[in-house]
Image (cartoon, rainbow, N blue to C red; front, side, top):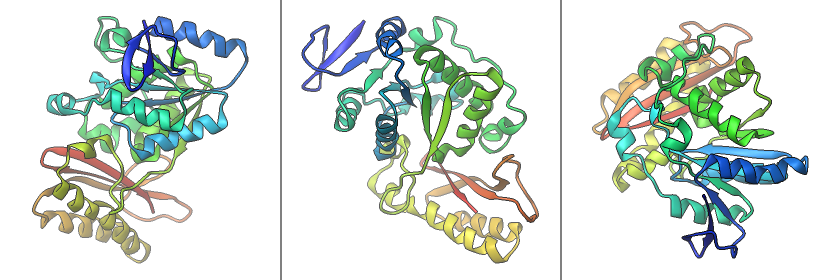
Length: 299
């Protein structure tokens, strides 16, 4: 079944509006045959919805650089290891569609349910990403990257994109997807795109919608601390930069630090000493009222 959009209401099979929403992969694939027959490039933006300006920037880049663009909106249960996080994750499809239309009404939306993706077998495939899955997020969220790899691989098989766009806020995930494409020999180019930030520096995230106004304001300290840690890193040791970050959040009334790591940007392995000719990147995860936020910055 596919849906057409008219005045933000979902109306089945009325050929008035130009925008398509599919909730069934068979119908989507049939629709995409038209694109493939024209030998055009297909850009793909996989999301879990609750779209923000960062997502829209990915869509804009895809529309600019491809003949056709597809966005998926699917809250993937197998990448959540916290049931409460899955339950409370924002689901705002109608609002998302209105935002997508601001970029282009020609974007195709794929908004499946769990059955359409997993076909009754809600389990993750296991992947060996050559060790990068064991760092940072993988260490604190067991099975997370198996869930990510499973859904991304299935979405690639359905959409068969030329190019796929991912935000750099989830930098480790971006590297995981690049490795997935490499080991599975999937013919798609993975393109990383810059982080979009709110006015106080908070990295844009769908989970920000769960924050109160006060919490959202306080969360600006995450990026501010990363910038100060970068300044310390330039002249002092990795340990001194880490101790600074730990002290900031040890004294914070509502933000609790889960981890802060400085890693080799290529291997994602955490580092204890600085080496010449090495690009470093800092990674942080915190909790605000049981809402988990991550950020990253190149050092």
